[in-house]
Image 1 (cartoon, helix red, strand yellow):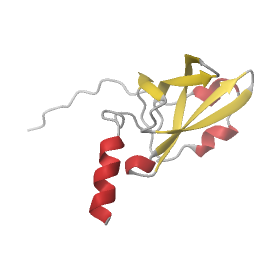
Image 2 (cartoon, helix red, strand yellow):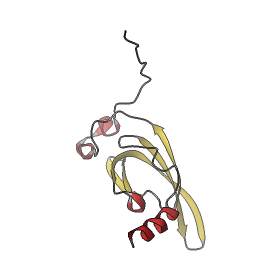
Image 3 (tube, rainbow, N blue to C red):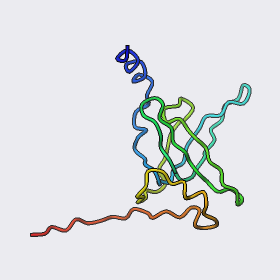
Image 4 (cartoon, helix red, strand yellow):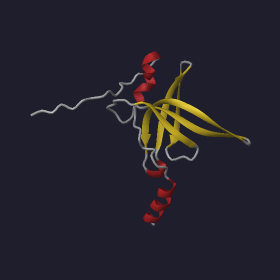
Length: 123
């Protein structure tokens, strides 16, 4: 029974959706249906958590708008998500960044960015 469920869910999973991690700045293009009209809405922010696995995987994006913190939880393999762009990569030492909720002002979006690091050959 378990193999049958895995096969069905594997068909519904989107490819190339696991290329971002916690702490990265992302822009999510989401399809919104209002009555008979469809439009694409962009939500940008910092990924503060990733949970689950397989088809049940979700990620939480946080953004500060007009001084108020807004968080949205997106299913990773949702058909309403058109694409996920990565604005910036970051260096984070934790799996969940819930401490970002307590930050105010410029610090609310401040995460250590990843820079090019050269490997030194030691003899």
